[in-house]
Length: 88
Image 1 (cartoon, rainbow, N blue to C red):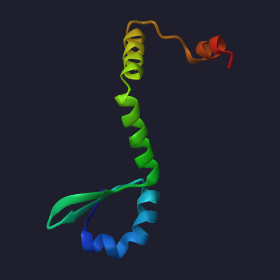
Image 2: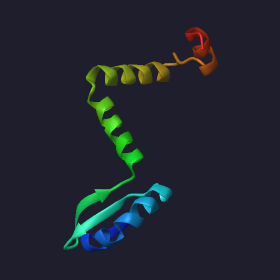
Image 3: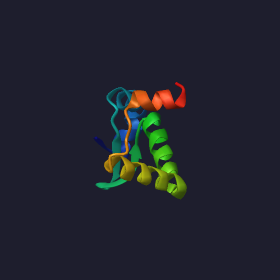
Image 4: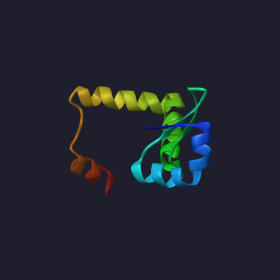
């Protein structure tokens, strides 16, 4: 993670976007030594939002938990068999 003051972030903003994206990195922006902002590549932001949406869906999360329990209970099937069952 990159650490920058607000003034450093302001002066580096155009370069920062490309650098963070290329390195798959985030930046912490501070004011008076305390974190106030996070700058992250758009793809990471979208991924985080999607994850939060999934986690907020109680029905979907129950399906995930049930699937994990079934897998741990030995009810999993090989990927190729799953594809065949789905006609893929």
